Length: 185
Image 1 (cartoon, rainbow, N blue to C red):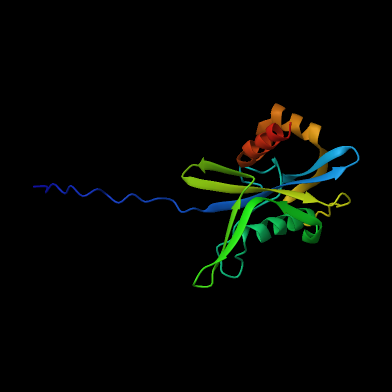
Image 2 (image 1 turned 45 degrees about the vertical axis):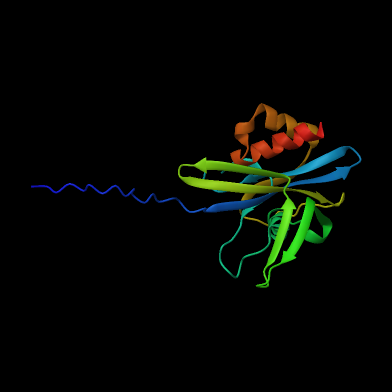
């Protein structure tokens, strides 16, 4: 005889961990011809974003020796992936405030440029996108083995690429680029 479980307690539902909290940077410089944007093509075989165009992005690390504020991390990604010195870059943000908790933790409050979310299978990806202006003469020095190509591209050309072929870009970043171009029109 099989005994039935008549328990009315709900089964505990397991949620996947927040495994992909990222920061990204729409990097631009003002030139005599207008704005130019930094884009790169990923070199990550076996991933959904291999061969996709994107702006610099990185996962916020969870190991104690690698934890950084979002502002520091985003500038580190620009340096790591394009070789641009953080001293030549400015993170554009609004409503920034800092608070030190009674426990000594620094809490940063800010309005990000754009926030995106994507559910890939059961893995959520969250990206906080910053707008980063770099010096006009900032040059690219490809330092990362994560990228195949890094380049400056004129605003009009990038807007056309995103509009005509969004599938050629890292999907988590497409809404941020669309928002940026809608806002700057």
